[in-house]
Image (tube, rainbow, N blue to C red; front, side, top):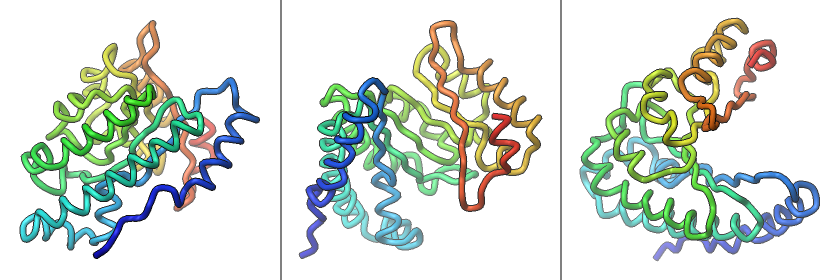
Amino acid sequence: DYRFPDPAVSDLFFERTRRVITERYPDKFVCGYVDPGPLLVAFNLMGYDGLLMRLHDDLPQVLAVMRGIVDVQKGIIDRWAAAGAHMVSIIDEFAGTDGLMFSPALWREHFAPLYAEIFGHIKSHGLFCGCLFDGDITAIMDDYLALQPDVVEIMQPNLVGIERWGELLRGKVCAKASVDMMTTLATGTPAQCVEEVHRLVRALHTPEGGFIGVSLRWHRPEYPAASVAAV
């Protein structure tokens, strides 16, 4: 008998957000986020072990939960559009450093259509669509790009490889990327961070643009201040 929450519970937040955008940032490009995305929410509801076991033991239950999450998040996207956002990005994670947490075939058959629905919903409002899938998603890269995100966000570029990202995206899809948040930015020197910035620019930038550089700050734990400043 469980009912997923009504997205209207967020109306107060979005009314405040609309006023802030209107009063303070009327000439700025505004990106709203749906973070965490559908699978991260499902993992939080069921636990990682619980969801992965259910993919084998009770796939319909997982898909029913995902259906409810997607419907709620579509309502959140509606509210970002009404608040004045120009883009909405989905942040999700279903891969680790060694690849997907479940088979690519399972993702293609059951989950890719849900992400296509979300991406399409964003674009139905006339908004740009961004997405960050954490981890090594090499196994589904073609399927991911077939969803046609306008901006691909990359915070761990060394997992897939900076030059490989360049081959996939340069001149085709806008890349919003940071020095690798799990390796270089976390443990590298400021000089190594700067060198990685140059690699990202060489791999992803074109004379017409197409590359957005991001300098991340984190608080669990915080990144070295000198490295953040160098980036």
